[in-house]
Length: 421
Image (cartoon, rainbow, N blue to C red):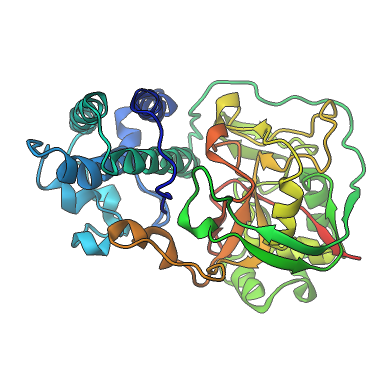
């Protein structure tokens, strides 16, 4: 994860953005009990307490240490505990053992955050410069990524509890008009530019902007719904080997997968951050792996879009949708009042693409520890696009490249179909 140095904000504005982002993290988890902050339900998730500490460690390690000469670290031991995978910064606590960190306490982590916030604000108010604005902006976006992870990780934690506790108390389900038939928007293909423009914020994996030749294609004008995915299940989609990639078929059988994550065995209900709710057949399908998305596409006589195809379509519509600020924290049915098509390009669910997560032509990671975030993960993962119902609105853009392993399901993953012409 990296930021280009040409994105520099005025110090006052940056201080406000910093304070809003830091406050937002605590607001997301304000209803948790102390015991909830510590649990790690699987190696891919992290305890809420760890997320709150790690994002603070980022600001302390990469900004306050180098740029504030009289700064004293809150606790030297935290460097080992809350480093994630910046190997150039030294050794770290094992990722799959973060749930064993009953200490430091939640109160101590909040005090740690307050300590770092006080000094970051002092640095910004006194006038930063010398690359500080660059790193603070990067840290804000890093915090926003962990805000989404906090929600998806605690969802998995709460789902493992037989009591099925809720994080929020809200009636997010809105049943409106029947879902319109799926249609496909036509794109003539040709030579197009993909990747971030030269101005503004982006992560390094979105660069450099480069030309891509696309064959003519069609893209689904909305996301695939729960009802449509239910038809796939009812048609024995999980039992037809011809629909699955070899790795996917092995995964389905080894893990005994027969429905999306969080769906009940009778396919009538699903676990949400608001507790167990009836499945809304018109809402977008979510919490499916790349393998499941690919199998569904094959069953529907279609395919998953390539990321350059998705980006071309997304660059022609507004960045509007169901984001974390909406407060539902769950994918919502298509709003027919939105005239733009294709619809639901942003928010609701991260859309699996058929593209491997690999470097763009000419990609160069940044030097030093900051350059570790993206480049070294460009292997064995798939690109997802568009953001989700847990993504901050001002965090996403058409060029944003998220990436996950094909078997992952705990994020808000969904799909959109594409077809060749």
